[in-house]
Amino acid sequence: MQQGTREWFEARAGRVTASRIGDLMSRTKTGWGAARKHYFDEIVAERITGQPIIKRMPFLDFRLEREPEARAAYAFYSDNEVEVVGFIEHPSIANSGCSPDGLVGSTGGLELKCCDTTTHIEIITAGFIDPDYIEQINFCMACTDREWWDFASYDPLMPEELKLYVQRVPRDEKLIIEIETCVIDFLLEVDEKVKQVRSLIRGSTPLLTALESSLESLGVAHVI
Image (cartoon, rainbow, N blue to C red; front, side, top):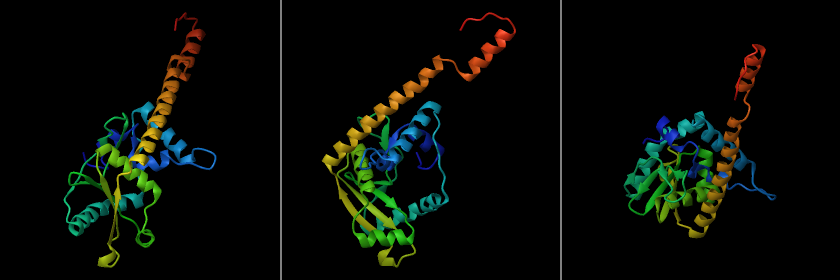
């Protein structure tokens, strides 16, 4: 299943995905962050409608176009073969999974970021990875049962020696347990909200109300 296709979006619809783990776990000093609520609403909507919410942004499409080049650069410089895969379900948590940018060997994986030049420079000079990416990567490892994951930032506009930045992230069992607990709790909340919304089907809907009014105006007895 090719990533970015309609089939791929449909496979992810209504499910927690690794790329949104940062949103799911977003917090403020007083509780959950707004990003979690927004993501929650999206998942509920996808469950109710059965349709994926697809947001196309030009800058993301541009970055996706660079991914094959970035993947080839990583394979060349790291001397690793990269397997391209689609959506992978979590082995024990239903309605969750990940879409790796690649699987490396039998124990590793790959997260590619095709950044703009200023962001790429920030990454290579900072020497550390955004915590959201660490959470995303560890959930990918939980879904794929991998031991490490390479985070790679790529910018073809940079000098040859600086085009590709790679940092290896080891599996963090403690963090994975924390993430999986949050995912399970989140999905239980989603299930409850979906149940609540679907229960309204048994009540009076605008269409049913209009039908009842029409029947009453015609003096037709009806039983609902």
